[in-house]
Image (cartoon, rainbow, N blue to C red; front, side, top):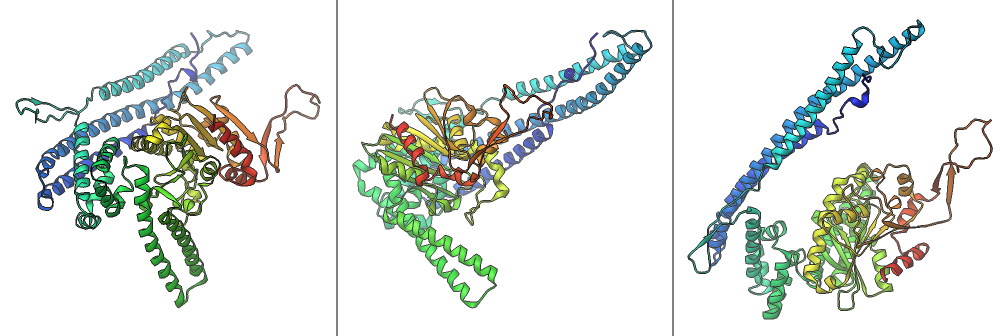
Length: 599
């Protein structure tokens, strides 16, 4: 019989503590959904008091699906949480048995080896079938215990899978008269009905806001400050919005002017609105914000006139300088020199459009900047340089510099790097969350702009931005070309698209050194992926560190194997940021990128 070994011990790879934590989070989310449903139902029940229109009754009846859908969702979520918690308990037991078995097997193997060595020493001989007193039976027992742990682990996982698979989609049945009013049909999948409700509510609001003048729209929003939030959280489908918008542009273009000028906060963020109209709305939003920033600058200047400690004075002056940069940038947007496709500073979201979408547009680039990017990076023109260079050198290229939500390592207040959050740049879940938003951004843009839809879709990601771009591919975005500008890596679920050409451009920099050490994205980096065509440029200050082989002084002088080496540089951070700039030292790389885009 073969001597039991550690390889016979089944490994419990799933962390039961983490699984239990996720189950607890799901329960909390389910409770939160139930609470939100109650508040939403209460709020909507008063609709008839504030909103008198023929469609109000229909909206109220359609909203009846929400509490049922929420209850179904909460119940399903709690069921999933229960399954995961039970699995966590079984795996915790299996992991404890695994640890115990490993210790016992190590001790047992040592005892067998000692007995066999002693047998050899006394001249009795020893083979693989030599056992001491009780060792043969003990070996059998340990093998059986390994099998039992494997059975416990596999059974628990398979039962959990079966239980999860048995959870079907919740159904909500609604009776709706057909056009003749004589028959009914049942609609399952409450999610589809919820989308229909969101569309109905959204278009009802848009109809009201566009029915009069811009002043009328502003007055309505003053009375209904929740309308913007409703459209932001549950917007109508982008394709449907675009169809509605185009229809209005044909039938009554003045109604759209009233909407843009009277409700720019809504129009500037609404998917499906043509980019030129969103930019016009956000120019108004920028003007309003610039005036508020001016007031804050004056307040801070007044605050310093009564005297203050040196440290407080320096902090106040730094804040004023940041505000002046913001004010100047917003003024450029208000004047039309900067085009804001999205501007939501409260959520740390901003998308700048560089170029013009028209019949000559050949390429639309989604450009995602890297770690530490904040809205202040836009105010200082730090992350738009590649897009501006490309558009200046080829007017057929339009670039959208994208930022929605917080980025890894950013400090939203100061705009400086928050090194305490640097590990977020290696967090797959953060990249996946951004990837979903980027994929939705692409879908909305293509719905809203025929010019964008006819053009080639490309993507560029600087540093962490590549992880977000490749995560957007996992979420369904599609590009003709993907360009890694000193890109960090790709998520585990990413697989290259056979219709996409991938490029990596880089210098020896801080990130490439870390990538060489294998600590970035678990080695899933563009220079190690054959999908990417890599182009690495040398710079003054580059050098190679050759590692000692470990051989003694009497080792052979000549070897057929080259010594291990690490490419290094004296300017690691400068080189990393260089590729995202339009500096003279980066012109060669930019020209090479432009050449590939033009193919």
